[in-house]
Image (cartoon, rainbow, N blue to C red; front, side, top):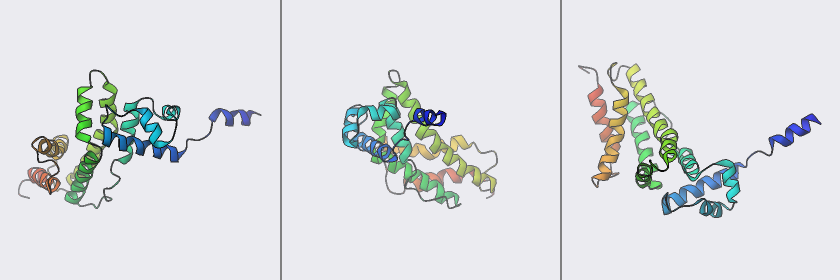
Length: 198
């Protein structure tokens, strides 16, 4: 009897298919409607689930949207090759593709505009997408540092910002996503991090 009660209290496992459908619907609506205009009711209808099904999994719209963005992060980039330039370019190109697919610059603007009213949106975006991608870039740079490709005293956090920065600057300057931007950014940063005489 005790085992039966335990089993009942645990409930049925979540459906992976429903999870995937909800996350995909959220991404599609984010891309077509933007964060402000999309609603959980629309997500539920598109995923063919009830709103309560969504709320059982994610507490708020911000929670759902950032979980969907987290799920698609680095899904298209090739596995690490061990070559510093190749791996950095792959991460940056995947980042740019993710931003393009979900109208990410508009979402970033919304996060900043709503920071005072919906602070959890920016906090979750940072936690689930921004910081993990920065950590991935830093990990590649740490490997390069360990191999002696860049200076031992290099400020890797500043280097990560310098790698990502051109995308935002080019977007605002009307050159967002131009061909070769990732390779150019990597070449500029790596050239400034090389040991003297390298």
